[in-house]
Image (cartoon, rainbow, N blue to C red; front, side, top):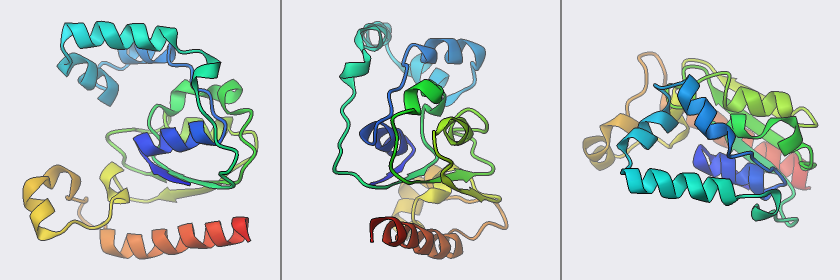
Length: 180
């Protein structure tokens, strides 16, 4: 399984992770500029109340795991801080974990690094120097660059196309090595 950002969170859950969603409220209070805080501030009061009630209703049995998944590649996982060691203790499949050095959406150390330190077996870890969050997305077409420039612009000196040649090769190698 491959997952990036919210998909990385989903991949961790699918291979056995159990997040503690009650950690989000405290995180948002402690990090008012975080992506989660910005999302909460932009939501209507009714949606915020509904979301809080839904999070409170989640239990460990709420999360669905899929034993068919034999390996996971996780890039910049959202809500990494919600897992902790207890929440990741049942992950037994090999994990390849990627972190962008300059991720402004999911900054270090609360996301990928929190997952790296909490996994029961050390993952194959890759730190992508000079990369930002959206650099894990494939290089943009001209149309996408015009329509969604915020996800298409990389920092000066970061070559997204060259990175994806390496990234794609390493993901394929990891799956070949772990699934053969």
